[in-house]
Length: 122
Image (cartoon, rainbow, N blue to C red):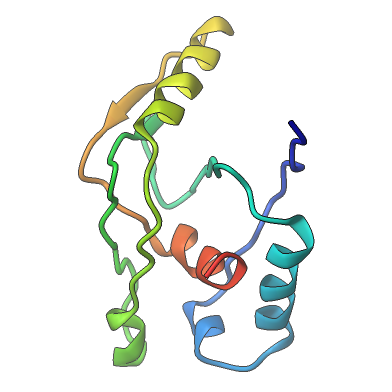
């Protein structure tokens, strides 16, 4: 099995989805360059907890955690599936290194997740 690299992706403004910019072009091309992954594990700074928390939803909902942007952004949906099994495996791996993590339901995809992924893996 080929593993894709770990990468840091800055999402910038949600407007990257509506405006034709170099950042938009980069994200769209970056997904094609990396190839389609079997799964994606995301660490989001928009999901602040005292210990690591892992989303366990099979069908995460959308979180529109921003304001003052055009209506079309609030109508966008990124219907990627969640993976409770991957979340469980990540928690097990963290525990092996003395890091306690817990599963959380009904959290959804924040814009730090769905904005870049909507371009990288539409």
